[in-house]
Every structure is written in C-alpha cells, then in structure tokens.
Image (cartoon, rainbow, N blue to C red; front, side, top):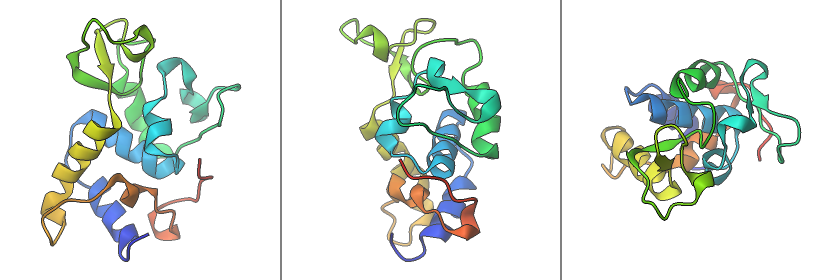
Length: 150
C-alpha cells in the first residue's frame, strides 16, 4: 500500500460524489473485497439487515455502517439484477444477468468504476492524476474496523 493510503482513503470517502460511487467506495473500503467481487454482486446476494451477503454466496462478504446506509438507497425500486449499474440502458446483446430487469441498465464495469474514482480524486492528488481504487482497500485502524480481505 502506498505511503499515506489511510489518509487518502479517508479523503476520498469524504468527497461529494453521486450515490452510486459513494456506495461502491464505502463497500470496497468496509468489506476489503476486490473491485471485481463487489461489482459482481447482485441485489439477491445481499442480506442488508445483517450487513453481509446471504448464506451460500461464496466468498462471503460483510460491510460496515456507511455502506449499510447507502446500499438500500442505491437499490430503491429494484429487487433484482446488479447492485451497481450504469446510467445508460444496456445494449440488447448484454447478458440478462448483467442487466437490471427494472431499468434495463447494465452492470457497472471495472474500467468505468476505476475511471470515475480517478477523476473524482484528481483534486486530492498532488500530481493531479487521481488515485486508484486500491487506496480504498487499506485496513488501517485509523480508517475503520478490520474486515477479512476477499
């Protein structure tokens, strides 16, 4: 982890950003899971009251209070499909499991999630390039309770 990563995570999580991005960033930070794992989550995988994935979801994942506040707001009106979706309708060729059955929006890609984070953190980066999502995986005691890395 780069020097200063706990401070970077705290700074990034304090940014004003759209709900989708904030929910993603907090879930990444609080769960310690990989970006690929988090983006692969479907609404049916989540047990929101327990702040964890449902039994049988492998590997299991749990999260903290900020993600617990944001996730239900992100999913209002949706009961199936990907947790994190794009702002546009998915092309017709998109597999059904990667599309929201309610909105028709596609699953958010790693590339787009990384790009959004990098752009959002540009003002925080002294070099002006923005940071990578790995900044959010720091599990230092200064940034919150330790979670099992997945």
